[in-house]
Image (cartoon, rainbow, N blue to C red; front, side, top):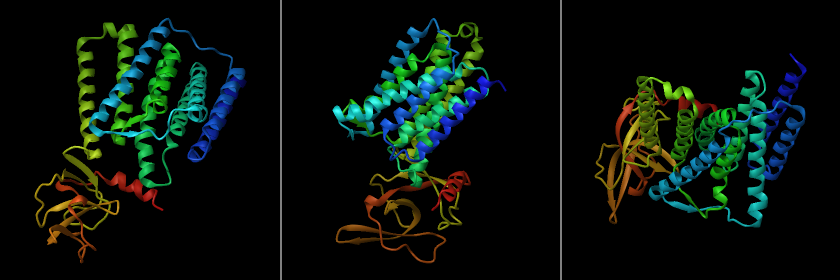
Length: 373
């Protein structure tokens, strides 16, 4: 192994170790300190790695195009808020916000993209792979500051929203930087990250929809760039292009339906069964699709989904009591000897079970078992 390659690997591994440590303390680490760390590594890479990136003739065009994509992303995101509603931004634009958040994030994004550009133009696939891991870790640190990953539900949110979305985004950033330079990526990231500090209201979009948008949008951008600037795309057979469009459309529809079910924000929702209280009717590891409760008639013996003390439960309705003009609902698991303690009210009912899908929920159960405290 040449000394130059070894030098690059050592720098990359040290940066990965540093970022992994920062990730575990992302709730407490100061963003200014993180910015200084990434900036310091950018300087190290600048002085120790001499090979420069190739300049693309399309860099200005792609920079403007990526800026437009960033604005379109925000428009799409805020249009989703027309359905889901909005909430007030936790940080208000001001001097402290500029010092503590905006400037550090600008340094983090610019420095990380400089690191990306330097590393992906070095020889060897391992260098590029390690660079990709570094960029995903930086993205994780940026976003995990708002989550408590010691909590299982938030950990799953981090995995679903941040990790997979970061992988999709960084695949696009790697491709764009390699083909057209990093200016467009920097501007796109600045637009899609810093808006929360400038706009006083943020769409209250369910986390799975945000995840879906961040995962599918990079692919759309990639398709546009590839079609516009790849010479081979103009000579591709019509059948091949049609097949790609059909495959993408099917994938888009399937993902949309899946996200809609998981979010429980529309007529139907999906939930994984994590206990054996309904064994025989619905088993542990099954997933059930339920119809959302919208003041419809709920009858005795219906299997319902309800929330009690922030816990989602699937049990059978065994008794309905009218007490002082207020309906009380009593439930029981089919495999349990006794009925559940207490009762639930209409506001606690999420929906009525319509369909059982055996076994597909086991991956979720395994994850819960692994991270059980």
